[in-house]
Amino acid sequence: MRVELRSVTKRYGSTIALNQVSLNLDPGQIVAVLGPNGAGKTTLLRLLSGVSSPDRGELWLDGEGFDRDDLPTRRRIGFLPDFPPLFPEESVLRNLAIQLRLYEADQPGVEERVLQLLEELELLTLAEMPAGTLSRGQAYKTALVGLIAADPELWLLDEPLASGMDPLGLSVLRREVRRATALGRTVMYTTQLIEVAEGFADRVLVIADGLVRAFGTVPELQAAAGAPEGQVLATLFGRLHETRL
Image (tube, rainbow, N blue to C red; front, side, top):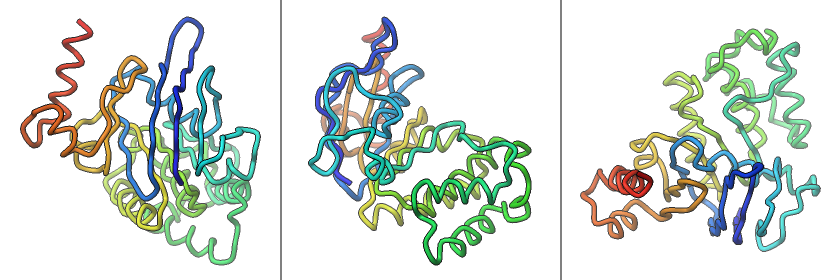
């Protein structure tokens, strides 16, 4: 999915979460959104998912204006928040069935795909357990199974690498993200971990104080920052800290 933001601004009261943000994202890419707490990272994902709407500016998907009330378009987008909204009294399988039905993804073969992912993520023995009994990492992995099985065109993952998942979950996540982008999906995830963004992204978006501070491939950012290889994002963050003092 091709994503475009045109001068998007979002306020929460007197706080400007995003300020005149303009971006173009091409299909088949992994985009890491890097920034400190309160930078506007989660707000960006919420706007792209349709959970929130911008106060100013426009969102365009595949060349058409994004109407958050257009359910067929919303089904093309998968948003996995930091704390996934599962039904605590329902079982893991029931939660996944609800998620897939919302995406109209309960097609032939999807059950086998779900069971395969549950087994890989060591959730199969918990399949009949209420979601409210799961640990944070298990809950995130459950919601991740639903997202992977639904396979939307735009994946939006909020802090997936800091959500309590174990190394097995992270390994499956990385594999499935690469598979998705090879099929032309667009994947955007937020993180505060510089080494993760530098090592697992086709492009890196650096946000601070609601403003886009840098956007490009690591080599592009390296050339612009004049930083040594392996220290590009750390150099950028150091300069941002100096300007905020």
